Image (cartoon, rainbow, N blue to C red; front, top):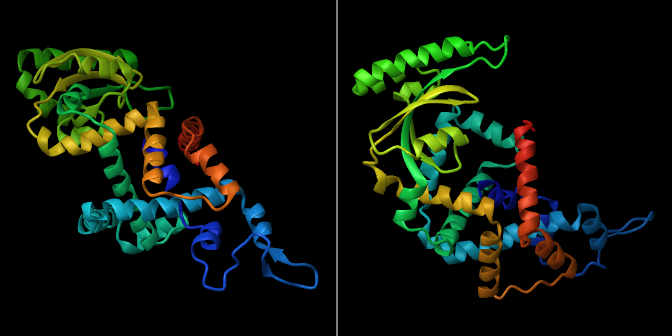
Length: 321
């Protein structure tokens, strides 16, 4: 879902400026001239063709969506909370200068980033209204977990982990210790686990179905609270998993619901496109340009196209682009 939502949250572009930020003297039709010269004139239509209908549609829709969502949910989103979260991000990335440098690489300013964050929060409000999820469903879809991982080397050049034989022997020794003293799980995880979660005594926090590899997830969701699994082999190595007590469920419930909605949208983008269509009907949106209307309906409001774009974006991210 996240990718699907982020796909619509794009930086302001030339097309957005052309369509959304023109002054009183701006051209009002495609035939009107933007620039004239002895060699020929540049009309609005020429610029739109050069930019492309899809890009113009994306920028136009982003601007429209922002206005509608702010009008509908502006009083339900806490700007101070967003600013506080951004301040935490700035601190995490080494200060304002470093953070702004990272944003610059994405061709957005700090102000644009803040607006994008607001838009994401507005979209969450919309989807929380449209996607009904009960506390029971959240509990069925989530588990709080900790694990101990002994990594297996992927190849001889791999500097992390052990050989399969060594890793298996080590995890079996750990399992014997836990069978005798299950309360030592945190201590052993901190000392022996080859995962970054070792710093938190192996804690992974809440895990939502679909988040982890299949074998890990299958073993975890069979466990009762406080129960420790047998040894589980995945592509990463050997694990021992514990289902932790969900003492902070009510505090984390809202975040978990958002993750479940994200999973639902990945599986069925029609949920998102239907929500947008209802919103556009509610606000009596009237497209003045047929090309933009078609581009929006064929891409942003088309669940198959949206899913394809999401998958393409995800593939690109996986390649590190």
